[in-house]
Amino acid sequence: MAHRVIGVDAASKKGIVLSCGAEYFIPLEGTKSIPEVIKALTGGLGAHAVLILTANNAAYASSLDMLRFGGRVVCVGVPEGEPVPIKSALPQLMIAKALSIVGVAVGDRREAIECLDFAVGFPSISYLLLRFLRVVVLC
Image (cartoon, rainbow, N blue to C red; front, side):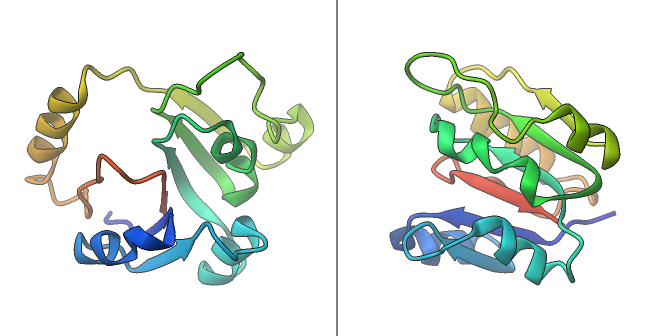
């Protein structure tokens, strides 16, 4: 099953995100509630998966609020500074919506790009993730 992609990042990256195949783009600047925009774009359901590629804790904080029932947060970017829990990872929410959080260890940037290049050949993967993208939402 292919996923539709929503890219979330700085407004200056809109062109590159859309040129790489994202169906929608949400700018960080000026967007009041990214989870609400995600829900609107997915018919009120939320995303199947949210891939966090940035080292910014704020991206993790709202990630579970973007998911639909059975959704998954994929942690790739290692947050900077003092470790903090994921703000939206409340047990009640995770149980009620059957959500999961998984971590993915990757090598350096070059190895991550090689891995994603390899994945392009598979029909179930509809989008090549950009090394600069902060959040990728699959719906």
